[in-house]
Amino acid sequence: MGPTPLHVNPIFEIGPVEPRFSEWLVFEGISVDESGRQHYLDASVAYKRAVLNAIDYLSKFGYSKEQVYLLLSCCPCEGRISGIVDAPNAVATLAIPTAIFDQDIRPKANKLPIGPRVVRNPDIPRCTYDGNLPITKNLSATGS
Image (tube, one colour):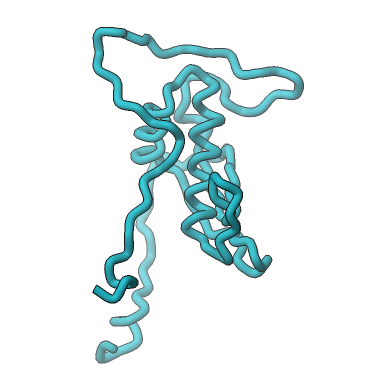
């Protein structure tokens, strides 16, 4: 505990950030993992599912899953805990601005995405990504 409540619960105001985007594509995830196992109100699993949903969707536009993963790590996306009152599910969303893409990524009725727009070079070593993000272990939770 700090000398004032602000030391424990800081409050800050975000400064002006440009550019500001007006159109976003939002992906949702719930707290059910890839194997179908329910994780009771686990927002981390829900956010992971939202990210994996975004990776799967955007890879249909000609981007590799590795490229989408890297894009999401540096683009101005917005992640939110969207609901954790709907027990047993936690819900998280990931919003990605549509203007950062060189093609229209919005869903169309009865139309599959057109791609690819990336140049694939077989001489470049590739890393593999199977859609599963690594799970980090919380060492303090094991009592060690």
